[in-house]
Structure formats: structure tokens, C-alpha cells
Length: 311
Ligand code: RIB
Ligand code: CA
Image (cartoon, rainbow, N blue to C red; front, side, top):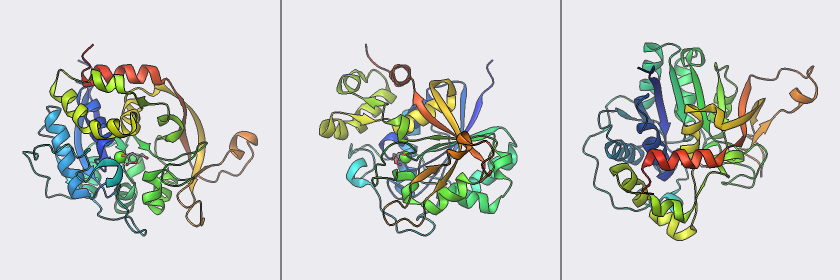
């Protein structure tokens, strides 16, 4: 029996977060210990409802879902219903989830599980990093208690999507991202727009989704975006795939800072390349494994397989 990977997901369940949950839930070797939601694409209460819907569609109805931070640490919250739909799932008008969120908060849940399973849990953070930053403040040992953190976020050598310089998850709460990226994780992987820009679902792939509850769920929540744009960037599913199989990508190990003060660049993720240019450069902060290239074809093949593609 293969050892099961213990996962904790922190998300802002919009369309691609839900697809990431389906992707992970399709893997028998993965144990999703719990899900926490954070303000981002939608408010965390709606993110929790959408996470429960995705977990039920994926046949994992008993995974606990906890509600986390309802706003960024300092910045005003700006949701993304314009992209993910008013319901956060492509206005697919899905049935309400059968189960309810837990009473425990997402930050408390993260700290409790990290303490209970020291060195064993992989954290997949696919929303703004508010909950992770708060958990670091509550439990400063978190970077040693978790096995690793894989973050969907940032744009290191490519344009942003929330602004010319900043990617949405980082831009939504730059202060939280700065707190997280300067921590000394056992391993911190940044899956940003540098690679998600190659993980594009095309209309033909969308049309082939079907033949199972997860695939039908995926097809429905993608319909609005595929109808409007005839493409969908699989940001969060790619981060999930890289967590399960790091060989999908190649990496640069560099310190990463978040710009907090730039009039035009606030929320930008700045990699310190002096480290590679001059080994004697000052060690400014711990290094992050930044995904810089990806085998997109292999990922898209795996995505179709896991979600159920009819032919
Ligand atoms: O920039 C893309 C990221 O922002 C994804 O995680 C998407 O769900 C949104 O949270
Ligand atoms: Ca997300």
C-alpha cells in the first residue's frame, strides 16, 4: 500500500480552486485532511460552500471545511466575481452542499493539524495567504511543523494578472504574502503565472470532460468562462499537480520579496537574482523554489485522466 500524502488545502474556492480539489480527490494516495477557506475570489463563507460542493462531487464528503480570514491583513478586499461568477463557480447554479463548514476556524485548524502531524503535512495554498500568515503568527514553529508549502501565486519573470506586475493571490494580501515568503519553510514552492500561463484548457478538452460526477461538475463550472473566452488557465490545478509530482516543473531557488509600497508595483513578487550572479551576495532571506518551466502537455493529459475525459 503506497504511503498516503497528507494534504491541507487553503483556498478561495472559485472555479480553479474547485478543479484543484477534484484533481487531488481523484488520487487514492492522497488524504485531504482538511480544507480552509480565505477571502479572495469570493468571501470565505461562499468559498466554504463551494469547497463542500466540490468535495461532495469528488466523493469526499467527510473532509472538514473551515472558514478563515474574511479580509486581507491591511488592504481592502476586492473579490473576483467578474471572473468566477456571482456564485464563485461560473454561475452554474449547482445544488447547495449537503454538509456544513466546521465550527473551528481555518487558522486554528491549520495550527492544530500541523501540531498533530509534525513534519508530515503538505500545505497547498491556492488563495491569498492571509490564513497562512495568521497561522505563522499563532504558531511560529509552523515552517518546521509542516513538511512543505506549495503556493499558487506570483509572477516572477512575466506580467501579472491583477496588475501589470502583480498576480491576484499575492496582490489581494501583499502583507500576508511577504510574511509567508520570508519564513524558513522546510520547502516552499511558488507556482506562479510563469508556468500557469502554459496550463491552458482548450475548448476541445472541455468538450471531452464527462462520464463521471467529477467530470460533469468540472464541465458545468467551466462553461461560463469557456463560452466567454474559449480558454481557461488551470492555475490552481497546476499547483496541485506540481505538489503531487514536482518533476512536472523546473525551478530556480531564489529569495523572493513582495513589493508593499510601489504605486504601480505593489503586490509584485521580486526574485533576488544576485544569489545566482554573485554567490557572495548577502543572504537576504530563505530561498523559494520558483517554478520556471513546466511540462504542460503531461499536466493536461493527467488533468483529463483524473477528472474523467470521455475519449
Ligand atoms: O491568479 C490566479 C489565482 O487567483 C488562482 O488561485 C485563482 O483561483 C485566484 O485565487
Ligand atoms: Ca484560488
